[in-house]
Length: 212
Image (cartoon, rainbow, N blue to C red; front, side, top):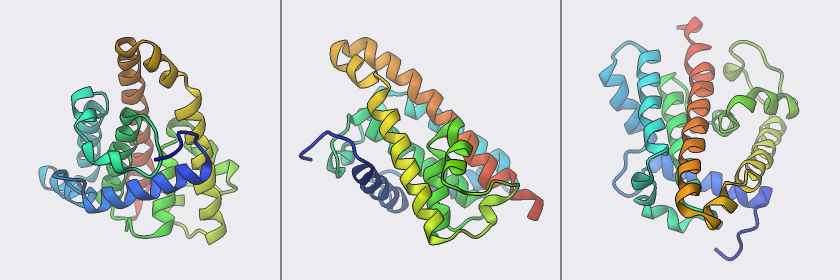
């Protein structure tokens, strides 16, 4: 990892790497499909309850420093970003993928992958899609997307994450005051993960239930 300077290209490469690892499973952690199956078995026939329970568990993990520092496999990520942020990206992508699977979506589709990444924008996710030129209506996740639209979404996600990871000030705080920075970071990570999870449930589960 030669450079810590974030670019859209580097963030895109990292997201693709995280997506692959979340699909296959990292070290001794469940893959996204295994996680989805676990919660579907806990809440048979109730996709919404399964998805919400999964998100609650991931909110706790994203704010737990012990869990974050234990994700040693993330040291091989293709760009240099602080380990806590790398871990949160992994947690969130795997969480959203699992929610998509619970909702009956195929996470191997490029369109679904793009929407998974868009969820990382949290409360700004719909705004991000509009900026990417995607028409937003109910059940829009179920609609087809052109290759160009998918590319625009992925680029907008990359730019959004550069702002979030590089411009929030958390990195600078954590370097200057590790304990305070860690506490602030944990709070922000938990809020961000919750927002991401709520968007994922809305898009992949709630909006699709009218078709069940």
